[in-house]
Length: 130
Image (cartoon, helix red, strand yellow):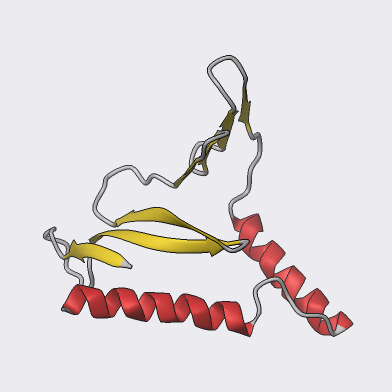
């Protein structure tokens, strides 16, 4: 974990307004780096996911509801997602959680994943203050 950030604007807030994180992810026994950039001072909000791999590039722009998947220069899928309701992401999570409680099943995001997320956040805070 490597993090650079701080308060760089004139905004009246007592937290970092710009931060860049370099994280190590583990999936199916393999490690790979990921980068996250957060900014509260940019005028137009940008909500973008960009996944780069040897076989494909996936770009999802949540703000513009746009998805592009490219496997090479000749083959790509581009789609404007009409009527995308960002709030449905949150209401779907709540519905999933209530359904799991009703059926006594473990949710996708269980307590262990929440603890892991909070440990990452606390590690980021520790790295920023050092």
